[in-house]
Length: 561
Image (cartoon, rainbow, N blue to C red):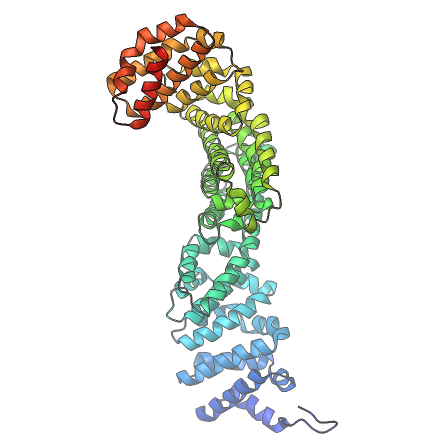
């Protein structure tokens, strides 16, 4: 401190500065050199003008030399501590010092066996990354063992080193996203999740900061994937349908797939997956689905598979779906709806149908059936109300799902199965849509599936037939003309004769719906046909151990009697 114009309370004579500098460079006496290093450590800890005066890159080089060549472990520790404190007190010169020292030298000390030296150089590494020049960035590319070293240090016995490595990984990934890709493909996410369970006072904030930066890292990652896919698919439009064996393009394809796998690791992480729910990320994943369908199969097939794994993971985690329901329904759902009928690949059509089905089922049964959206919105960045999202879901159903149902039902297995499941949920969501379904001419399809050898003869179709039978939008005459009485009776008879438990209650419910409808509209002939065909089977089910089956059988018997 200073008082008026008086000298500082402490200062370092020029001769002392010269002596310290000389002792750093020349080992006349190891003990004396140790004291000189310790003096610098104390000065750099305090900071201020004297620290800046002594904290030159020449001092940094001398301290690094001592770290490398000192025979005493204590001297190494003191020198590394002094160098770390030099970096911290003279941030403005960090880039210059790193360029003079070299990134390789800093990374090399992370392999050091001395825990304290490793800890000090982990601090230096973080500051060097934050202030890295292009020279340092390029030098990092030559560090082939860097990923292996960082992953190894995450299992270090020192929690301080673990925390510092987590922070350094964030800075390294911000600097060049390909490091994040390599680290994720080396089990980074799982290791950080395990660190989060330690609940250490040093590690926990570091993991928290890792999570706070994950949104940015995911955006950088998705941007890299999109740019690579554009290069892979763009060449096709430029050069026609040629076969690609170019090694650089194959390498780019492999790197892109690794980047997709890194994104998959994040999206399947219970700790970080909500970072993948941003509007930009969702939109770009949708664009990738469309773009990859046009790319050369030899280059994009593995990438496409990984992207669909990402979509499947997204559709199975409600916290992501609740994070940004508006963009998922408004951006991603139309892409899936279009691709599930327009893609030339049967696998792509199936995966799109499955993912869309899973999303629709979630939003209908989990969100609107149990009103979870309103409770989840407290942590969601999406400001839309439940009513707005409900309207958007209804719009997607009318514009993109229902019109595609005829094509889906005619597609190869198991696409029709997912279509039937999705339609059941849609009609539960909005019963008035039975009119739209009827206008598409699908009632005839549903009834035709009530055939013992038809692959679509399942519980979902039985439920659909029941819903359409109960719907007053569908004329009873049309149902009877399609043979619903005979087909329903045939399914019930087969169910009873072969004891198909899964079919018993749904087939009885369909029969009850038919009996109720024909009784209400006075179709006595159809009623007699139903009674004559399956009365005996229905009565036998009245004794079934399942209460739901026996009660429904009893209702049917009373109506037919």
